[in-house]
Image (cartoon, rainbow, N blue to C red; front, side, top):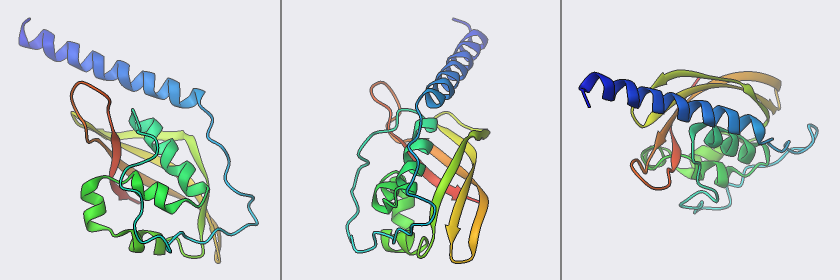
Length: 165
């Protein structure tokens, strides 16, 4: 197969996979978090968060849904498990959980997901979410750098390698 044909074929396959991920992520509703008036303290009493997530994310859109569902439930250890190994090396669980002290994510807008960058095994997604805390409720936007830490044949394992505002 000529090089140009191979590049076109790979590009089409990647775009088809992304489209399938978008379609599937919108078919699976994300459960709502606790009622807006309740406050969920961070699970900082758990010094050793789980090493691996409960459910492996098979695509970046599912990863975002699993991550924000954990945050909505106040399961900071579960959300931390979706961070990639490199990010976990630079951000301890205690520091991560302390960042949520007194506040919690109440919702995220799956329809706001936008691709803002892509690589061979990575995708940068921008997402809008709502946080409630002592200062009130605020809508924020984050850019999540999603990386497949198990590239190649087999079952993918997507994790968050960067979080930017």
